[in-house]
Length: 108
Image 1 (tube, rainbow, N blue to C red):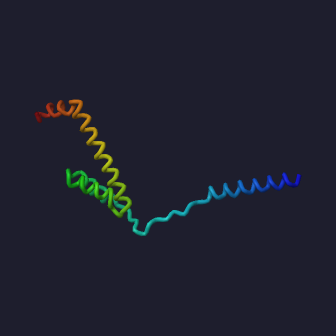
Image 2: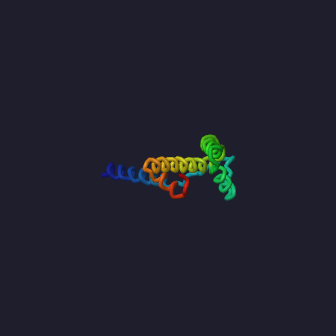
Image 3: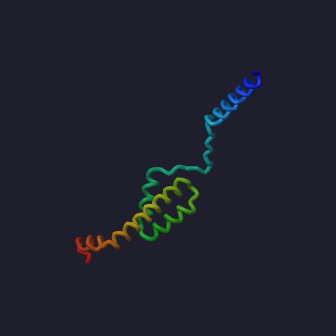
């Protein structure tokens, strides 16, 4: 009986230790060069990325090489939106919808 009790006590202790390790809060380390972008910064970058060709090139370069994490992630999201817009444009052009819309505006 003593052996069974000792094994049960050991299992219970190990379970409590594992549970305590899982619940322990993690330490969050913020990089020293971390600087948030303000609302006007996001607004300005959005206008910059909307410029055809130049803005798109800057968007790609910021998405790949920006040191600021917020700017890099924002540029990546804008680049994803650019890819979605191009894909939608291609699909609509292939379906002939784009031609119909342009004719309705008098472009053709």
